[in-house]
Amino acid sequence: MKLVVLGLSLSSSWGNGHATTFRALLKAFAARGHEVLFLERDVPWYAAHRDLTDPDWCRLELYADLDDLARRFGREVEAADAVLVGSYVPEGVEVGRWVQTMARGATAFYDIDTPVTLAKLARGDHEYLSPELIPGYGVYFSFTGGPTLDLLERRYGSPTARALYCSVDAEAYRPLEAEKRWDLGYLGTYSDDRQPTLDRLLVEVARRAPDMRFVVAGPQYPAGIDWPANVERIEHVGPADHPAFYAACRWTLNVTRQDMIAAGWSPSVRLFEAAACACPIVSDEWDGLSSLLRPGREIVLAREADQVLALLRSTPETERLAMAEAARARVLAAHTAEHRAEELEMGLEVARVALTGPTPRRVPA
Image 1 (tube, rainbow, N blue to C red):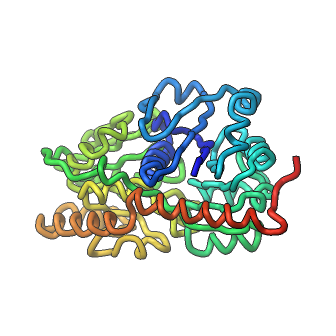
Image 2: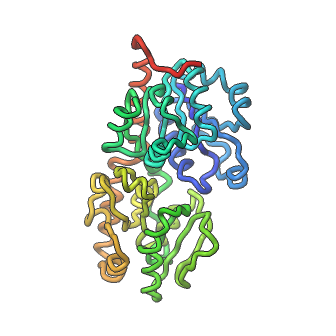
């Protein structure tokens, strides 16, 4: 099929998790024989940090504003077999209305931020999605599974809500031989609702263990944070360097945003990437995590600094390596980009078939 995607970013992984998610998914989707056009709003903060400009598995185009989008790509959106709009697209409500008016093929919404989106809708914040648009998307692909899917269908009228978790490009993310520079590392953009957990499970551990080494990598951390001397700060690690980062960590920390903890069933892309690189993971707890990785065998769950410190000091090396390999095997068996591409294909086919029904739902022009 010909798929047009309007997403937050494909060209820049700086400060967002969307780019790596789209790259893995669409590369695998194209490998299944489909044609992909990705349309991205040209914004200065991503223009200054682009790390992918000419992918060989899809066509990437930038547009300046809504008028430019309609003028240059209206015919392609109209003729596509399917059009997928992502969360956090600038002026996403207007983009969604335009897509649902123009597209003759199936339309879908891909929410890489589902709990955040639902929290926004509940308080009347329609930054990139409004309630009236949801029934007009033939399928709502959600980063969050579990009860949230029923909520999207019952409360918001989605014809079909399906989990489409993040995934990992197994070719790009694999174990590397490297010297262990850090006992515990964290890779992620700053978020004020994640920071208390990061403080508790890494920063406090570092203060208690001055003989150990730690690292926090990612942009947008406030200058006033008091990092212990044994915590190294790295402003940005590009996707191509993620495997080397994980290879240099004895353990990596996974920290989840509060909205996603409340919803459950919301795995971070970092969870699958670290596992694919055979870096053992210690994570905060949330509903649904045990259905993805088995606690105690494929991942360690922790609530307090004492638990993390005991893990770092007392886990035998054979046990650490066995957990890493078990997590890698689980991810390769169920959570690669190839698995997600197949799920995306099936969901879009369902939406395409639904268009032949007597009353396909669309927002009026």
